[in-house]
Length: 180
Image 1 (cartoon, rainbow, N blue to C red):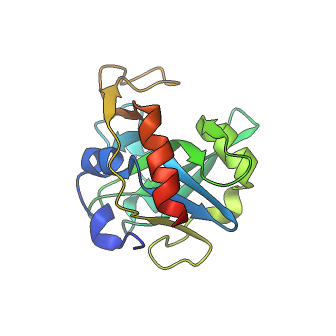
Image 2 (image 1 turned 90 degrees about the vertical axis):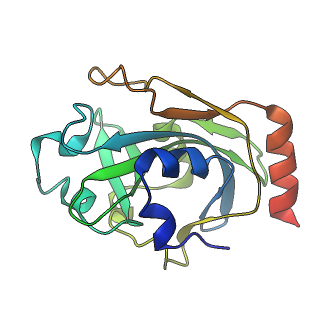
Image 3 (image 1 turned 180 degrees about the horizontal axis):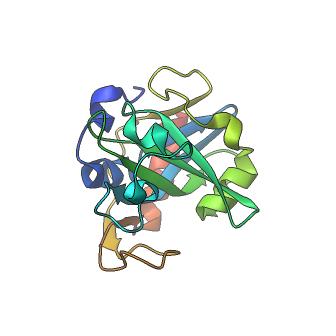
C-alpha cells in the first residue's frame, strides 16, 4: 500500500522512525529505507526553516507528503519528505536505502542515494502520496532500529533524531517480502 497523507501528518520523529523498513520507489528502483533524520520547526537550529520562509524552504511550510529536494556542497542532492501540519516546517531526510533488485547495494548517504537514483531539483515539490513515479510503500516489514544524534550538521547535535536500521537479517526479509 502506498503511504497516504495521514502517515506524513504525524509527528516528524514518528514518521522518521516508522519509515524504517518502508519501500522507497522511484521509476524502476525500489529500496528498503534503512536510515532517516528528522528536522523539526523553527526551534531546530539544523532545520532549513529555522530562519523562516524562503524560496528554498517554502515547501517545508506546505502540505505533508511532498518531496523537499535541495542541493548541498555544490555537488549533492538530498531527498526529504515534508511532515506534520500545514504551516509548521518539518521534514524527514531519507539518508539511506537498500536496493531490493540488482545491483542490491546499500545506498548509505543522502547524496549517494540521490546521485544513484538520479533525483535532483526537478523532483522538488512532488506529492509522493499521489505520484506514480516517486512514492513510498508499506510492505509490512518491521525493522529494528536505533536512534542516534544526527550527522553531517554543526547545530542541533543534541537531538537524537537519526534513525538507523540495526539488523541485516531484516533487510533480507524485507527484500523478499517486497518482491513477492
